[in-house]
Length: 216
Ligand code: E4P
Image (cartoon, rainbow, N blue to C red; front, side, top):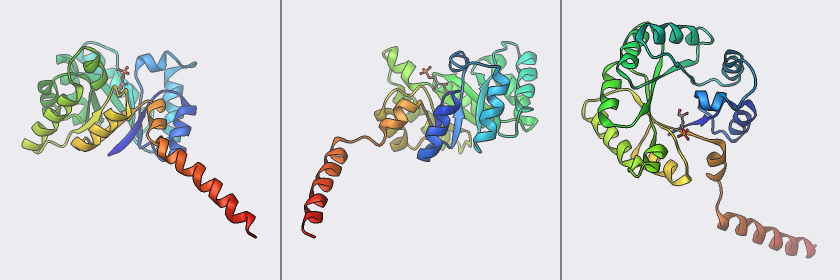
C-alpha cells in the first residue's frame, strides 16, 4: 500500500520523506489555511520536493470553472493531481480533464455509488473519507470494503486512496482490505512505528549490552 501524507506543510513532508513514508501528498483548503503564503507557491515547493502525485483541490462549483481551475493547477507541475468533489459537475469535469491527460482525484466520497461513477468518469484516484463517516456514526471501513469489491468486480483501475484517517487502526484496516493508498496526517504516520514492547526491548538490550561491556 502506498502512503501519502495529508498536509500542506513542507516540514511535515520532509519528516515523512525521511521515514520513507511519502509516496505522494494530499492537500485541501483546510490544510492550506494553516499555512502562510500563496497556495500556488506552496504547491510548487511541494512538487519540487516530492516525486509522487501532489493533490490540490479545485474549489469551483460549475463544470467549466472546475475545468479551468484544474487546467491551471495541472500547469504548476507534472506531478500535480486535481482533487475534485464527487458532485455531478465535478464528475463531468473529471471526464474532460482526464481525457486531456490531467489526473484527477475525486474527493469527498461517502458512498459506493459515488465511487462507481467516479471510476466510470475515468478518475485516476478516489478519496473515500473514513474518519468523517465514523464521526457521523457510520462505518468508514465498510465503505472501503464495498468500493474494493465493486472495483474488483468490474476490473476498474481507479486507485482507492483511503482518506480522513484518524488512527493506526484505520491504516491497518486499509492495508488488510487492500486499498491502493492511505493518505495519513503526520501524527498518525509517526504512531505507525510505536509499540511499547519495542521500547521495552530496546531498554533491555541496552542494559544487557552494558553488562557485556563491563566484562572486558
Ligand atoms: C484527503 O485528501 C483529505 O485531505 C483528508 O484526508 C481529510 O481529512 P479530515 O476529515 O481529517 O479533514
